[in-house]
Length: 187
Image (cartoon, rainbow, N blue to C red; front, side, top):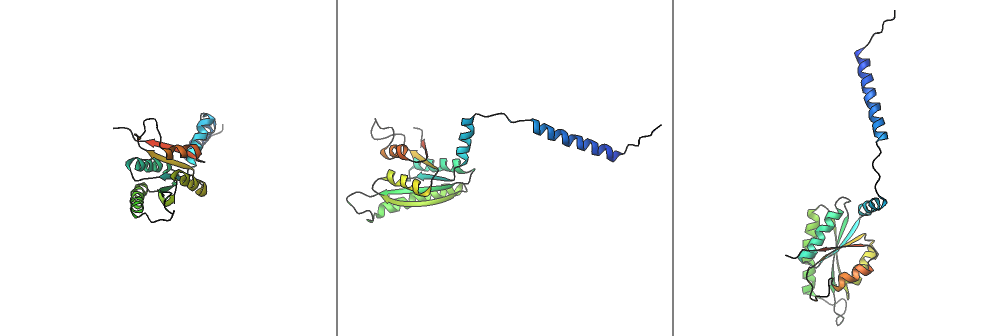
């Protein structure tokens, strides 16, 4: 008659080995559900945002655009590019001093920078001069390889037939990257 001696350590090792192997098999056989290709592409697109441009004019709707850009870029620690474009009238040279406009630009960018810094992201500040703001914004996107433009727009325009301003419409039509428009609700 054969006697089998059972050791406590052997039982413990057997149980641990069985649990480990069972967990491994469960993990291997538990295939995640398939997601549609369009959803996977959208997730990959948002995940690749490294540079987000927010043109600002220092008004509440522009600052809301800055906040939205921060929320979109926070997971990837994206750079938030804050741009204020000084539109110089054609009657003046492009380098003409515009002290009031320059002061307004610095103030607007400071407030926008505070929003970005509060979110723990890296703000990049840009004050540029141009005859047409939309053209300069599109050039900034091309030169700096921007992934996304976020535009905060006002809810009411001077002309009833115009839903978007000229600058916003031009950017939408000609921007070489994605554009998100954030409109403040009418209150």
